[in-house]
Every structure is written in C-alpha cells, then in structure tokens.
Image (cartoon, rainbow, N blue to C red; front, side, top):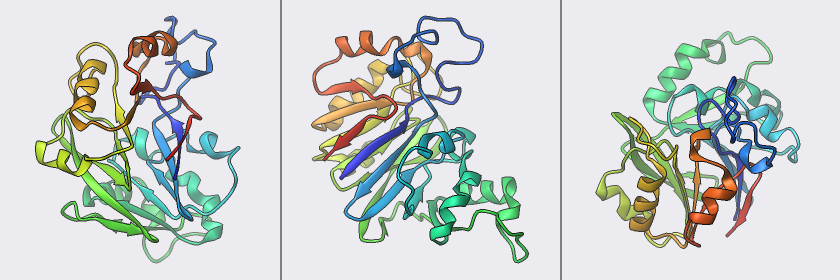
Length: 252
C-alpha cells in the first residue's frame, strides 16, 4: 500500500494570503502546503480522501488513472471544493463518492447541476454512496472502516484502510472509536498549530492522542502557518512522530 500526501495544509493553505511570517515566506518546499488530502493505493485500488479546492493542482502531474473511490470526511469547503475538477476522471466511468447523508445534502445544495434527470453534458458523473451508522464498506475489494471524530460539535469521519488510518479536523474522538485504531502501522492525524483552537487539536494534543493510539508511525497534517517551520518542529518530535509535507509518499 502507498500513501501520497496531496496536501497537508489547513483551510487557508500555506503560505496564507497577505501573511509575512517566517513560515509563509519560507523558501523550503516543506513549508508550502495545499489543502488537506491523501491518495491511497491499495492492491489495484486507487482511493482519494477529500477533494480540496487544490485538487487540480495536486493531481495534474500524477499518472492519469481511474479513481475507484472518493471518501469524504465532512462537508467543509476545504475538503470538497475540488469535486467539479473530477470531470476528466469521469472518462473512466462514474466516480463513487462515499459520505454521510449531511455531506450528500451539501452536494445537492452546492452542485445541483450534478444531479437530477436533465444534467447537461460535461458535468461530473458521480454516484454518492451513503455511509450509515459507521458501518464498514468496500471500495472494490478494499475494506474501509469509518471512525467517528468530533470537529468541535460537528460529527465527521476518519477512515481506517488495512493498517493505515486517516483522521483530520480532530478536536476529539470518543473513546469507543479508538478501539478501531489498534495495531496501526501508520496514523495520519491533524495538528493545526501550537496554540489552543476552538475546533482543532493543538500539536501537543495531537501528540497526546497519537501516543494513546500507539501507531508505529504517526504523521501530522492539516497544519496552519502557526505550526512553525517544518524543520524546527520535526527536530523536537520523537522518532515515531513527524510533520507530513505535500508530496510525501509512505509505503506500507
């Protein structure tokens, strides 16, 4: 299995427009972050988790091949704003999107032209499959286990795929959900910044939860410019923890 980080930034991306801080003006590629998404290749199956406003830029230089499943964590724009750019991939057939009902309703409101009987030519050809009651489901032959995560008061989803799990926009996760995260080789989890935030974990809080989960290796993602310089933060983290960066590939 191969994990590629398509983007590791928060909703504003990094650099943030109009900011002159040391992170936003850094020349290091690790400090330049598109909005948060990953690609998972397992067996002969290609899965994307979240489809950000940067989706076109994230995949333009990757091999052009079928997307077997798009998993959506939640309906916030920085996680779904690139869905219209799925159009070229519909040459391979309709794209299956897996999401909760509230995400489907958001699509109906924001992209009504993709649904209904009289769709015009060229719109994304997408099928939405509803994730019900956190029940596992399959993309081709790959089992996906949904994980309940709380984004402050908004219930959203993380996903486990084999010995890999992806949790973004975490404020906390119910203890009973953590039982789904045992024996992980790789955990990817959000860590917005160092200071407290109303709806996201700090880096320290993310480290604490990662220790509780106990994956062999944890990568932090969904980071703002307030996380600090990539090289400086990584020096202070234990060997089993690391800040991810755009384009990083991890093999399991």
